[in-house]
Image 1 (cartoon, rainbow, N blue to C red):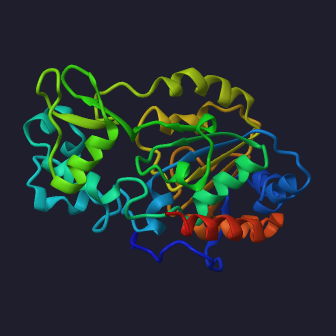
Image 2: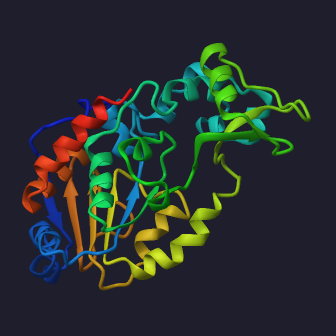
Length: 299
């Protein structure tokens, strides 16, 4: 079930599989990737993060049958599950998204997972090129990933604006209106509905994506994809844009995208378990656990 145990110290019980090509098994393994970390061979690690990364925090992913977010929206009487992130539907009926926002507003109900702390650890060690996250829960930032190293591809809750006239709206007031009153704020300029700057379907992605992604994929020396179905463009294309000789590591429950090529490694299972195994091999486990413990004490 995607509603797996809450994040924290645990021992790995998952399987590592390699690309079907035998040369991949000979050349790139979890062990060789860990050795490259130990010898400081990786300088620019590119991370692509999906909803599975936050499952251990208690936040459901979107597409897991039976337990994903889209399978549990029946109570909102949506015309189709994705309508909860549709601007036109939000204008007509903001209640479903407001209810979801109350649940997942960053720092209110959830804390970073071990995997979020791994991103922060990479950043602290000076080898993180960038984290491209598809998530809107803000837990990468809560874990300590610096703003310049984080691209929140689908937006965030730290600012808000009117969906009609795009006039900015005070984010704290937006949060209070949604969380305490369960309503969408009204724009002071045109009276339209206000929402946090989460990217809904059909909206333009933050400029940070297009400004940075071409440079990042050209300069990265390792790509790690975690907890993603790799189904939503353009983020799903990032692993395919890197140079063909760059190792790609997938930490996921399912083999997705174009993984299975030479230089690919698939660690099958929950993200936190995979992250722990890798950090054990590198020798970073104590640092990871210490960072995780600090994030759980945040107010």
